[in-house]
Image 1 (cartoon, rainbow, N blue to C red):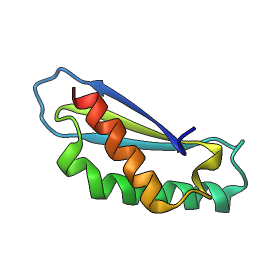
Image 2: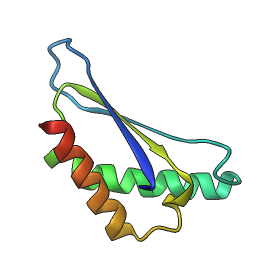
Image 3: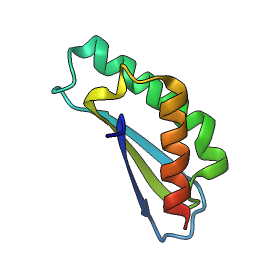
Image 4: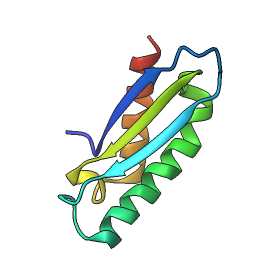
Length: 88
């Protein structure tokens, strides 16, 4: 199971900007762990969304339990794969 869930929803308002949101539930750990996971998700989105994101859509990354221990390169590959799947 990947370290996050990606949800993408086109807004349909004619604006081509991409918006992004991050969430990590309290089930993951204490505030320090949740904030670290959000920082990783922000870094991934900053790196990949300008190239692979859906224009005019809202993107939400939901951190999952195994995401904080997972290697950053693996998370990056998973997000690239998920965005490519959404773009189809």
